[in-house]
Image 1 (spheres, helix red, strand yellow):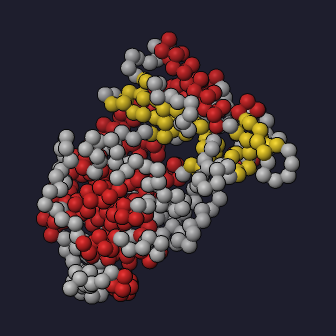
Image 2: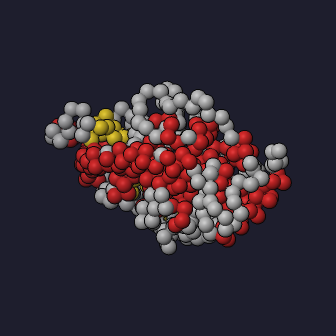
Image 3: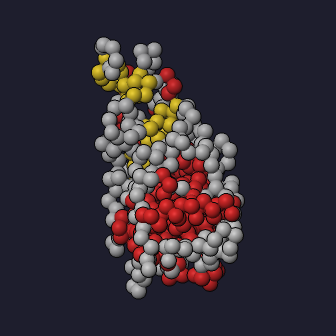
Length: 438
């Protein structure tokens, strides 16, 4: 029960019967996922070749739009996942980003900003609009996202027509039907082999990122040293953490243990069993990436990442807490809730994730059509009580708290005495907030 979820420090650890019995099934499922990786690399490269041809034509017509040939991170992400989420492609502007002034433009909306253009910066008059200055008198120019996007869209359409006339594109290679002026990106569907890849093309201003303020968190905890001190970009109207997050994923791949394999498995489960019956909504790969990054920080010990099953459970407990509190904080900007505004049934998702945590073998199989049945699985009231603990208490977003969740799921297995002691101390606090069942 909740009063004794784990042995005393130094005692024998809890073992998960389902994990012990179903280990081969975990690796069999992972093997199928990994076997597709080479094919996905080829699909990405074929689609990317077409995209680069278009962007090179755009650059030739308008040198202010640059072509970034470094797509290793995007290819890396594409091969990690099984879903058909769009691949974000940044098109840098030939503009000194550090010469611009970043100022907030939408109070209350994290990440949104104006990029003010000083009078010394020339050659972008057709991309700017005048706006009221926040200090002093007069007006200041700022980059107008709509103007830049419209210009890029026109050039992309011209590039498509040019490539078709030169027979550089074959029928069915590309669809531009999703190009929209009112979006913050321009979407193209490009064929890569027998698969279609969606690219979301985003103009950006590259700027050097100041050292990240981690709001009291331990710098680089769980990550290779220096991982968080990377360059970043800005969209035309909001800051972009896309490439820094991919760089962190790349860094996670250098650490010991099946961390990225855990992400692969959960992403397969999410697309297969955790969506609505019509397959319309569910957790995105971006959501699960963020869960992995938080898990890496919250479980910095290599002891947590020794096997696939235990690694998956590290992600599961973090995900369950986020679903229960209806809040998934961005790893680099914790004040931003990635669930906000998403059309997700978080209560339903929590039930599905809990069902998997209780009985993994039932779900560790590939199938088409309806999700695996959860019939006969009952919610664990002690686990639910732990997940409902106050969201605002930082003690319930720390290693000791998640260790309690792991222990409740009988997948703890940590021998470190100091860590067990911290968990026991927090448990004493938890027992005051949750009445112990008799």
